[in-house]
Image 1: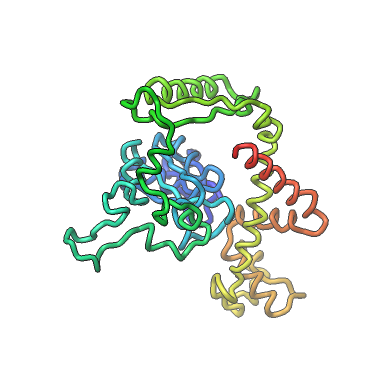
Image 2 (image 1 turned 120 degrees about the horizontal axis):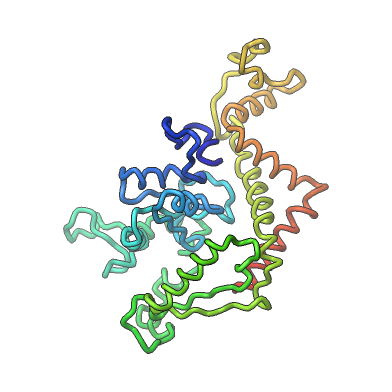
Amino acid sequence: AEALRNDYYSTATSSSPLLSTGGSSSGAAATIAHGSALLSIGTDTGGSLRLPSAWTSTVGFKPTYGTFSRYGVVSYASSLDTVGFVTGSVECARIGWECLTGNGCDDGGRRNLNGNDDDDVERSWVDSNKSRDATARVYHDDRYYGLITSQQQRQQQPSTTDTTKPLANIRIGIPNAFSLHETPPLIAKTWSAAANTLQNVGGATLVPIPESIISSEWIKLSCASYYVLACAEASSNLSRYDGVRFGLDVNLNDFVNLDHAQGIEEYHPLADMTALEEKISTTRVLGFGDEVQRRVLAGTSVLSSDRFHTHYEAAAVVRAKVSQSIE
């Protein structure tokens, strides 16, 4: 759901109702652009943080999937949802990253909440969320368990001749497949300028990735694949909001005689439904906005028996091919 089609509140201003701040985490970008906060947490599935940041001249940061726990986040597409944040500058993003991951602490990520040395009041944001999200990298990265020391990490990193630059030990892959013919010249020029800055100013090593490793044909299919997978997972995740386990507590008696009410006839359950089906239908119509309903319907469609193999499995193959080629 984009900013102008938000299910509850729109981030568009009354003075400029046609101006949008972008994706579903546009509220985070609007908060930073307004100056109301230095850092705002959001989630990014397919650009929900990065696009609003680009549109509002802020810095959107989407870390590697699983870096931050998704505990407490309403699941949209579990295999894609990533917790990130928006800041006003790259420096603020660096500070935010160090605070949230604990990498800026000398004591391995533990910060004292009140400034004293009492261990009872020390908390690690990463440690406190270890057991609450099985997809978090904390379960899949030896660095979090201390099995790889800082000295070993430094030894594993490639050495460069110029270590005075901030990105001296960083290698950045530049896939040739990302240079599509459809890319507007201005964007292509900006892309190249950013890569040159990372190399010449930052000291990073640019590594061209040929077409033989990452094919442009798979990249062109990735967008369609994303929408199929995201909608399918959304349909599954949001099925729990049925008014029985989760969701609104709707009193059906309030909607029995709404057949002739102006503007709300759609909330009236169909007459041929059972009592349980009436409650579930009414709850989901009231609780989900138009855009969410569209995505749930699309996801339900691709998961149906006659489309599962042709749509969902095909999309999963595209994702697997892209992932394998990058690895």
